[in-house]
Length: 137
Image 1 (cartoon, rainbow, N blue to C red):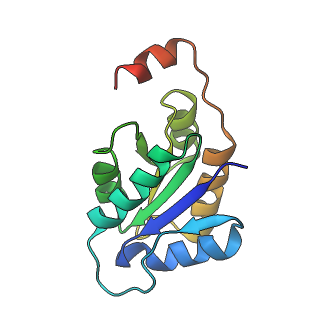
Image 2: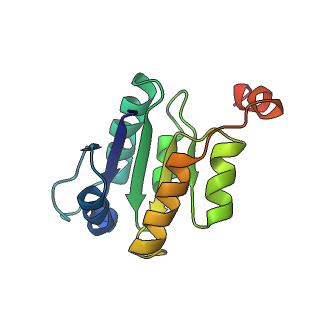
């Protein structure tokens, strides 16, 4: 089974808590409360874990998902995708081989988040012509 890491900032804490309750075998990297924290710290912590565990995935949550995506993508071999629809989530895996999904707690509800995570974790990278492009990132 592939490792799945999760982290958030204070704005994504409630959604993170819901996800960790629903998904089993997920590794929670914090924070442990909704006290104010800096999202780049948690994005970096999770990104390093995903980069060092081949085939693992990450879930990052903040208010919009955008800050986490920007911060996570600073780490080598990380392809973090801000996901907000079924189609863009599926394409992030099929074409970009994204290994981290970022979500915005202020923009999507729990049911949508669960649906997007399920799509993200179950969709396989197509490879082929897309592999050439991913290697250029």
